[in-house]
Length: 155
Image 1 (tube, rainbow, N blue to C red):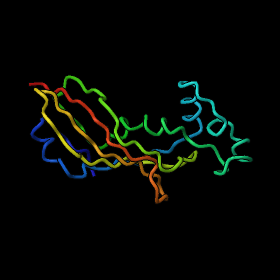
Image 2: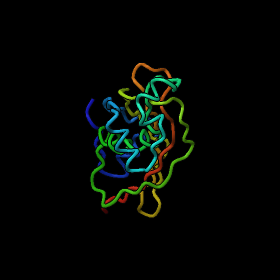
Image 3: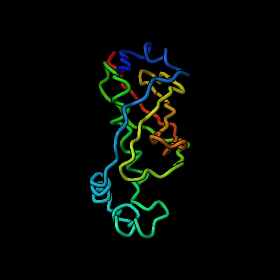
C-alpha cells in the first residue's frame, strides 16, 4: 500500500475514525541501540552490554530503550502519510503511552496509525493519532499511545 496523501484539513478529515495505514518493518540493531544510549546518556546494561544481557537478562539478549522505540515514530509515520501544504508540524503531546513488550535487538517493528480526532483550532489542525508499534511475530505490541500533532496548513 502506498502513502496516503493529504493536502488539506478537509482531506485529513475523511480519515477520522479510520486506520490511515501501517509502515514497513524496521529492524532495530545493536548499533542503533548503542547510538541511542550515547545520545541520551542511558547506558543501562540491559541495552548495551550484550554479554551480560545474554547471561543475566530474562530475555537472553539486549533490548531497545522504550524511548528509542518511541523516537522512530516520525520516520515510520512518514512512510504512512504525506501531509502536504503545511508550513510547520509540532509534536504537541502523548497520551496513554503504555510500553507493553520489550523490543529485543534485531526485532522488526512497524507502526499502525488510526486517526482518532481532528480539530481546527483557529487555523491550526490538531490531530490525535492512535498508534501501535507492532513487533513482528509477537502478539503484544511494543507500545500503544495517542500522539497529538499540530499541523499548520498553508492557507
